Image 1 (cartoon, rainbow, N blue to C red):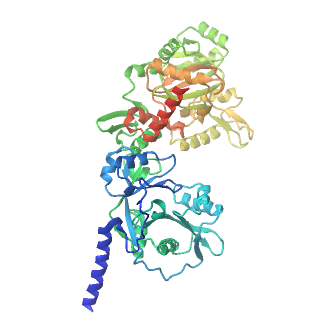
Image 2 (image 1 turned 90 degrees about the horizontal axis):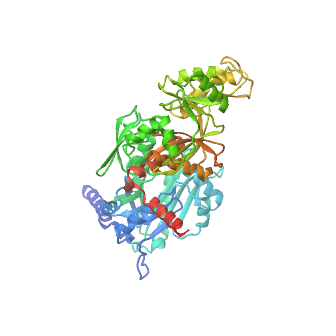
Image 3 (image 1 turned 180 degrees about the horizontal axis):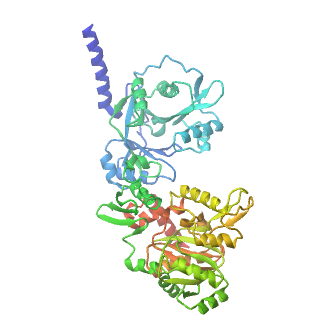
Length: 602
């Protein structure tokens, strides 16, 4: 008995060793392939991305370039990579070694299970509704979705096979799996197959759905004479690995390489430990840097300071302010009167301005000339100390005293009626534009103005990570008074009350993307202002009639604009491009070169 048991264990050990040693050689069911051999540089579009068969590439550089051509919102996968260190050396900043294991099932020895599905059955994907349901499951599992038309148009594709699990009673789709027939995809001499996108609805109550889908796909490929079926599974997915090993899968020494992108971010950036204390304006930049493999070190989280390092280059930043911005440029932005003179000399339109140190008669005359004025500190940020819409000497005196709490020197400016526009200019190119609107409350017929403001502040703070709230100060009280209310009055239901005149985010303002609507004259003004100051990253504030209108006046330039306020525009991406140009993804560089070529041809 003991001898017989040892013989069985020895036979099993031999089979496992044979599979690990033979690698891609497959099993005994290998079919003959066409005499011309496998297709070179084989790639299969799977809808969620492209499956790149690494063993068909003789040049690792070509394999790297194929991955660098990944489309937007897609996840390309290079499978069967035998020498990942060589592949990564050709694009170390763009590619990464996926932390997954490759497992193989020898279909020559696989035996179908005896347990049949209960309460559901496995069938082929057969309708566009099936495709929609598969995408729903993908979404719940945070997987890349596939356009339903792709599923439907590939239903007869001999290289791709889709199975779904359907509830016998309700007809609901409970799970899905995709299979790839390698011989039909690229004339694989080893006659292999592979399993992809196994997903089960998290709300499904039936047991064994995942196992049933794997077995059905295994039997499908076994019936078609395939030698083996491979799959890639995350190294820490213990439950899935336990299932695969129970079914007879064993690990084989092949690797998976992917491109660094937002979809794959958690696979290559490592733990978030140490970055939680950063505010949203610093965090968006650090996340983009880590996504590209740039080393990030937090210097002072409360202040938003961090250091980025790639190769021999190190850049210290405070949010979007970096060492690339000179002290001279910072000093120009710091003093609003200096900023105004510099940009005016470059041809940028500016409002008329006087110093608040002028006598009452001069200030009264300035107000009479312009109707309404803006009072603001010569130095300061985040909208602190600014009063808008001042139309009399008494309010001007109060506003000047408020501004002097921020800066000893105070400026008076002609008011331009319109909207507040922030343009983000990076490397002297417009990246994002947004209209900023002042904080306003809407009466509910029950709450006082003060209560409504406090409620609005809580909502704005929650939405911006604590960065935005309406201050209960003299300027807010003035705005409420001008609207015809006191702080303890109850506005009628549905009535909107402006509680600030400035549209700054930090005083409760809201921001609305208008990047696609901006008039070229506004872009020209913003870029001209940035060039005049010689600042590579800046937020240019203009007062405008409308985003599509050329009328404007320059307000100020911010040396540390909040990039997180402009999502989904690629502000953080362009900022990292500026700091580390060698980290720019291949696809972005190719698109830019094409744009330059098109403009040149025009």
